Image (tube, rainbow, N blue to C red; front, top):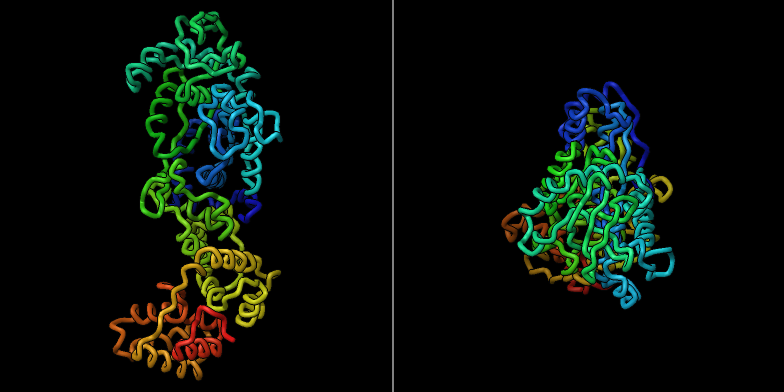
Length: 541
């Protein structure tokens, strides 16, 4: 996976398939559970259907990416385990009535005049598409296409109005009362009094109405509802004249499309349960469900659009490759995780480490390596033994936002590494500069060394002058100096002092690797400036 494309699905390999049957990686665990549904034979429709849903009243967000990338991982695991074809539908609920005007769109007053109407019947406030729904659907498809996801787009409006859902709608109409009895206990008294699974689309106002339904006729395929002025109107439930309430709609979609697998967040547990009951009530089979945990902010609070405490996909991609975000989504999907800017470097380094370990692993271990799932079974070479955090600190100590300046050090450290031979490193340098500029540079806080610390630093500089220049040897030298000076109760305190005095940060890279990359003479000069009390926040003259 790169910023623009996912690789093709892995080819079938009998030996690899046997190993996949034992893999502990959660996408394989999910794929095996899904395969159990077809023990008696493949689905009649001839393929296994994965689905992801999208509410197009807003723009695609990081949860959209997470759901599609995780579903894609399970789908690819399934393709290794089975020869049954599969498809992925990205379904847009674009026939929903607009309940409120989003804060981040133009022409607010115009949109307020269309509240209640299907999104596909509302003019596009941006003026680029036939409707607001079409505009947001285009944004969704562009978003998914950017990452190269293999999917088929479906519009609720097209499915309802084309008649694709007609048979399923009539089926639910025949179970009208049974569906009501499933939903009514979950509602308050006021909603319970008027609840109907069918929402008529008013021929007068064009709105999707939460209207009382006073009669339904399964044989005629109609309902009678009360219009906003109190008059009674009979309408067919087919052809887009009605839309179903959310939980009934989800169940109807499963039945109409034959959905076999769908993920959803923890906040939809009750919806999954109720929709599954409705699906079973009308004779359908609910899909295999996977419930993932929601994201938390830096303080451990639930991320909320209204609070504005979230992190957008474009935010992450400004500072790290898409593969690192895919790794974040892969890791412990059933555990609530903190999603904030500070985790980006750590996650990026974890992704790089997975890439480096992959080639030497046995096939079984490779299937358990998240890199297999992130890269569709074909992880690329990592490019060089250079971590993202190390690059960040190199940028910081150079006080440079010039890629050419950073490449000077990288090429000296690894002459064979060039932007052409190591495209991952080239991307990382650009991201490191952006992250340094926006997050590291404003927070740099250098401190003066104490007399004891200055003595230790001088000792380190002296030892570096005659030390080998490879990272491991340099790391050993750093360790030995820290042990030699009693002012540091442990090595942790020694390294913290190095980070705070030389790098202006409370945490930092593996010092041996950093010194090898930055250069021994440059490190000695840096130590000299620190011991002399110079301002390390300014580039050396």
